[in-house]
Image (cartoon, rainbow, N blue to C red; front, side):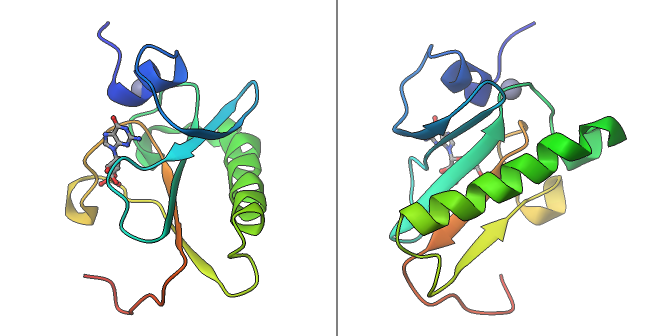
Length: 114
Ligand code: 5GP
Ligand code: ZN
C-alpha cells in the first residue's frame, strides 16, 4: 500500500523539522505554519482519522496529548496558552488523512473557529 505523507515523514523518507520522537509518537513543525508555534503530533502507526482509531488505542491518544502539553511548555507557550486541534473528516477541514494533533500558539486565537 502507498504510504501517506505523514507515514513518509515517520519513516524518514521525506524530511521534517522533528521536535520530539519516541517509539510511538513523532512531532514536527507544520510546513505552512498558522501561528508562531505550529507543531503537528502524530502516532507513527497509520490511522486515517480519529474515526479510524480503535478504542484500544486510548492510551496512545492520551500519551499524544500529554506529549503535546510538554512540547507547548518547551516552546514557551505553556503558561500563556495554546490550542490543540484535531480535525476529523471533511467538514472539519482535514486534509491529511493520517491522524494528527495541531499545537498552535504564540498569538491570540479567536473563537469561534472558522
Ligand atoms: P489538516 O488540515 O489535515 O488538519 O492539516 C494538515 C496539516 O499538515 C496542514 O497544516 C499542512 O500545512 C501540514 N502539512 C501537509 N503536508 C506537510 C508536509 O509534507 N510536511 C509538513 N511538515 N507539514 C505538512
Ligand atoms: Zn500515514
